[in-house]
Image 1: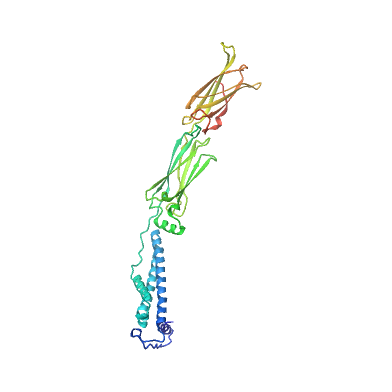
Image 2: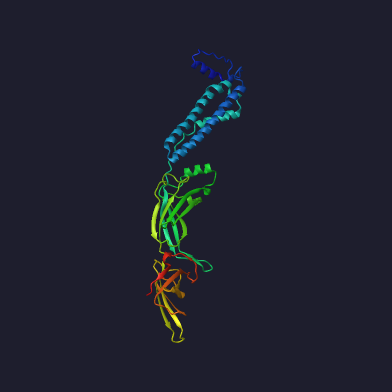
Length: 401
């Protein structure tokens, strides 16, 4: 233990005077039984190690102080600022001992040059600027602010087969606050995750579509890379397309964000964006049926002339023709009289009649029932994958008119 420390301990304990004999000063080249060059260098090595530890601790605390200040944690930033200053104070006190006691006691010439360089580095560190708290980075406020929907009646593939309809959706995300993500969050998260920013998930947007009953759909959007960066006032548009199934004529839509590393208090807890709309899908329906039996004067054969009325009760024309099938049955006794099918000449909006003249070996009785079945066709007149606004009325019993 160095002599100066022993003296302080004894004095503090009230042990009386301690006389230290050192007849030869280092600067005069004299020798000492204790302060040999080896002891002097060992002592300075220990102080240099402390200096370096103090500087490492200072840098760590200063960095955390800056993160706290930029994040708005001013109380923590002030505490860490004082902690950082304490490491400079420790450096100052130890440097004072070296300058006033150790180096004069030993003599500058006995120390290894690299140790003296480290002493000067500690002196430069001590004279550096005090840590300054940086400006707080504002909180972003990112949320879904709109959902736009465009009705697409159908799509056709290369073979002419069609499907539909679809809703072409666009979810709009707007940042109503400061830059998203905050630079401080991005910086610290990238360091912690040890991944590039473009590999990180910045946002997850959830879309919920409720068509009524149990008909619900959920859309998840994961935003990564540079698309996840939104300046204040910036917007992001996320497209999606969903197929409209049978009987889906109205939809309630929600859009919200779920919390991740970059979604902060300015976003979470906000109510989701909500909107609703009618889906302008068609609704095909067999309206009525008329049947008349008669013998053709030219060929003297018996025919049943029929007219089936089909209609589209929906808000938009059908993509293609409507195909209808009809069956005529006698009520009592129950027997099949005739059946026939036909299709409209093209897309249907409102009422359209389908006519047929069918050769029959049975005379049309007075008490008949007529049942119908209709389907939607593609624009080319072939069956496809088209939905209907109400399939319950596609197969039904008709009234004679």
